[in-house]
Length: 191
Image (cartoon, rainbow, N blue to C red):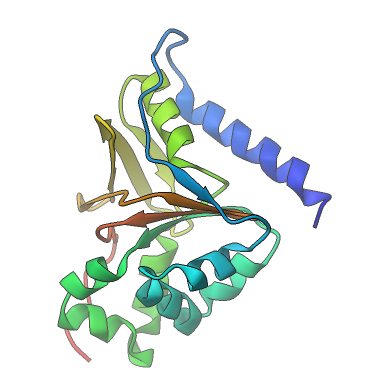
């Protein structure tokens, strides 16, 4: 696992450099704080976060939780419990085994390869002097923009959510809690 850390760090820096593109004289915008979790994996960090119990259960139910125990580096745009509750019945239906494919698609649309903190995202937005778009593991686009200290994430279908609270840095990535979902698939309408 130690041999992969330099490669992972280099990959994340290369990814950030490709996002940052344009201006050398751009000012770095303020960003949300991050919380260090020492050597815990993303899976452990998500499981320990009190406001991410729904996404933790969804990751476990979908089989994607194992990805976050491995050596790969990921950033999870994690809808908090309030975001799932706001979906009502469609949100509850997503955790039904009959809708596992939809759940996996939505969760993959919230996963970005690499280690991206809110500070790095804010720096990329400032350097580009505008929104920054990235590809998710669902091969969909998410676009980050910033107004003041608030970083907003927009999905391919135009849905928006705000990074809500401190990011959680784990040994193999970052969890960025959000106040909504930026799904690229339509919500499930029932069981």
